Amino acid sequence: MRPSILVIEDDPPIRKLLRMGLATQGYAILEAPDGRSALDLLARESVELVILDLGLPDMRGHDLLRAIRASHPGLPVVVLSSRDDEPGKVEALDHGADDYVTKPFGMAELLARLRAALRHQLAAQGERPVFGVDRLSVDLVRRIVRVDGAEVKLTPREYDFLRVLVLNAGKVMTHAQLMHAVSTSSDPQYLRVYMRQLRQKLEADPERPRILLTETGIGYRLRAPDDEPAHGPRAPGEAAPPPAESGA
Ligand code: CA
Image 1: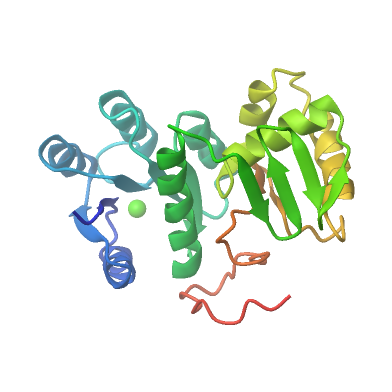
Image 2: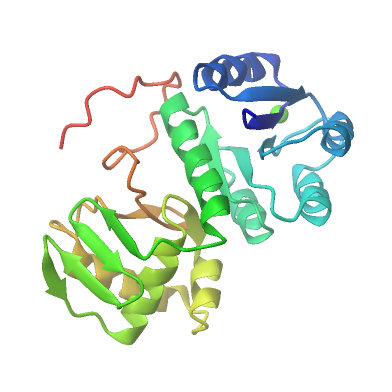
């Protein structure tokens, strides 16, 4: 059975873009232009992932998210939000959205987010023991971190943060989620210090990270193994960049 994706979006051109982009990847698609029809479809159809626009005509996207979380706890939800809505993104993530994509988005980026959300759902049963991306490898069973094959010593707290990021690779983790996961002080400054330390140990150039990426105003994202290397700043110009050159 093909995975079917429910697209909840009131804007017809964006629905069309999603329909075409997802079809090329072999996904079956269900479409809902508002919250009511989305809940209808969810009650009747088998859905494996939801793409949810936060700006809907008939209900608040966040309320719909909460309803989906309540009725379908394990169902991955990727949120579409506007560029300047950092608080809305954080609220969605903290209330159980798996990830977000900022409009206008490129199809390659959206597909990477969907893969990460689906992969994370599958990995929830059994975590992969060794994780590798770029020059980094992390053995979660033996707690060994290597960069270019050489073992790197992390402090226990640094390792805890890295472990959470590895278990959620490809997904954005909000500041609150990271702090909560390692149950530590809620001062974001504290988190920044640890992320900086990790970059100094893991990145070839800590000022231009390729592995541990910043989501400004939101949190951090560890690159997933099948992500494009350092997908630069989100192009304000729309349109799906082809998965072409992934040069350094
Ligand atoms: Ca909308």
